[in-house]
Image: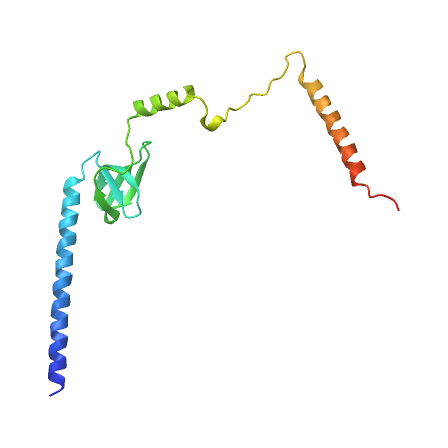
Length: 152
């Protein structure tokens, strides 16, 4: 008699579990159907690992996605999670080139202005190397004097 209620509870648990699994499978199929409809060439696609790329083509279970610089990458169909606009700005190549040229004309950020070394045209390269070596020798001699311990 004790076995009957336990068996009945077990059957009810299996029934609810199978119902939840069927419901989840149906939702996943619906989501995959919507993604398949939205995936047209040029659409932005997000993968499970967070990679955003433009959909190019599909060959069986392999999807070809293109990066913003034109590199094509191959992904399995199962890693596609979302189709839509990426969270970053997508500009055309013309806008990017304009932005780069504008950055070159703007003053340096936070007062950093790279200084170009001035070299007199009258001094040739051999003379500057010799002068640098003499300066190094002087520094080494001074360094050696300081490093010698005093005699007691």
